[in-house]
Image (cartoon, rainbow, N blue to C red):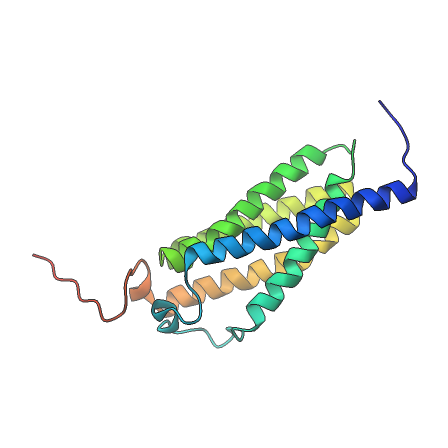
Length: 184
């Protein structure tokens, strides 16, 4: 059934979706970092040599907070674009990239797999680029809202790569740096 919605109805739909998607992304993002159990204060992470361009620890929650709002509003714009060609594919692409996003922390902080985390970040970047293009085709502003996230993924790739290069012995190292392995 084809029908036209008023601009007020469209704004209300966007607001309703935003009130769902933004908090959802915050909760899922928080959960993925808590499951991983790492970050500042974790002995394994604290002992890693960080690159010179590593941001201050307080930057991460601020940046991720802003990015989750932008992603949530962007997704809400697509979800409220009922009947738009390619909407289903765009939502699937978003789900794939956000699943990769939420898997990065457990891979890096939980499993200490620095190299694997780098490749997760690369896959996340590719999936986010695809999502951005698909969103842009439906609602250009929705695609634009993902550009800061895409830029931050590039930073995450660079950080993962450099941390891996600077700490080859820590890749896959469970436990503290004082652990000694003896082979018999």
